[in-house]
Image 1 (cartoon, one colour):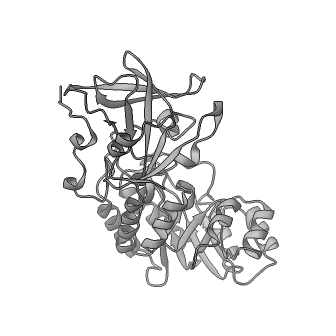
Image 2: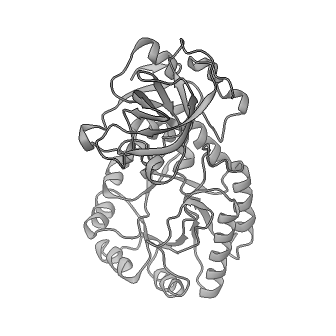
Image 3: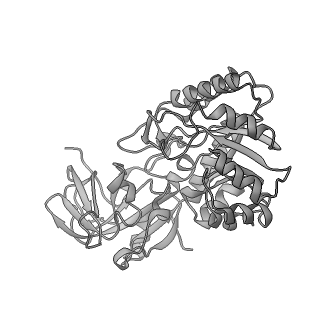
Length: 399
């Protein structure tokens, strides 16, 4: 894979016809090292967030050895990682997936949220004595930008009986929950952990592990959460209040927080109509969250040295397909002079961008390069480390 210092350097050598994924594996590695050093327990990578082999390699080289997997495809992809421990944390799985995961691929940890799912796990593993069971418990998602409640999770009324039954069957018993994606308030984790602590006391069942799930945030123009250290402090305080604090392992499943900064997409402007830009990637590509989840992504004009300093303006984007829902309202803040033939780099698409893209209308084909510069926004880099806009080939002046 070709390596460039920045998107601007790429465009000095090549004017791509397809959108380009700019990978920053060094950003993923830095995020992984931070979590491993600061989370008071074991860190699992939520493999659903980004399946690029280069990004996964960067995470493993940084020290990640445990993975939250949600499908047989993810398990088969990661089973070959040396020393990998896979946690099958989708609470509803097919019997085929359970049997193959346990029998052929070495998975020993499974989530469930009902008696029926627990029955499947026990039956398809042959009642094995080395199975670790994690009860998924419902919890409020009031502090997240993408709530995940409703589909999974045993209620507070159902959970005690499920814990009691699983305690008699499990090699190790755990509880897991998810506060929602892009949780922006540290208290979301503390409140959920206190709810779990009360459940443990009420049920009278000792557990060996608590998996607090994912949801740790990244930085976006519309969502600037407090620093991640405050989340770790909240988790540590709440965990210290647990009755089982001395005998219970803590786990987490970051996805977005590990890989959002690790990729950007470089798109070409194919038309401009007032303050709408028509570009060659969109809602059916890496910008799904910009179209359907209300996300705003940082954007900058790159490789345009002849543009004179101008004020910035707000733009919306249309993608390349014929579907009118291929629309990203943004706003995306760019120089007001942007025009057809220009290239724009859109950051923070490393989480869920590539894995949500498809080939509708024959689109969804990308070139890939490695970029060595800093992400446009970062939870980990010092402000002085983020590259100034001038280095990207265009000067900007605030209105």
